[in-house]
Image 1 (cartoon, rainbow, N blue to C red):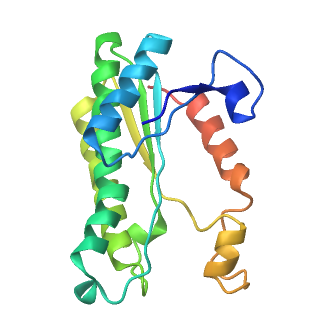
Image 2: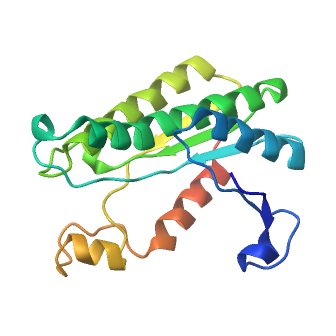
Length: 187
């Protein structure tokens, strides 16, 4: 893991409230260092936005090799679990906080080439429901299944230039709407 950088180092406006840290979310030691650095810098953690999405298009799930299985599951399920675990531990002393996990419609609808990714996202949705029960009432855990792909160069490639399946709008629109709901919600 590299040294932390501030907004000025990443091209954003210089601000003491911005901290960019590289970490592999599926590596426990890197996630622990990430959260330790955040807590050292800011003193507490109020919200975790658990948002990861990574897929390798695979043949049928039974024909995929174990390396692909591990990479997709580790990134999309183990990583968010490790982050949620560290966030909950950081929030407990303050008896408050929010853990928000973004998922995908792939966790609810099977699609060719998306089998392992779908399994990971379905598991992620259950993890979020379990956390909501286990951490209540002091820490609010909630999940959100994205309605589709955001319009981007990558989604254009995935959809072959067709708008089919792209329902999420521009990349920032969904994030703004979700942030507004979070700021106005209880818990």
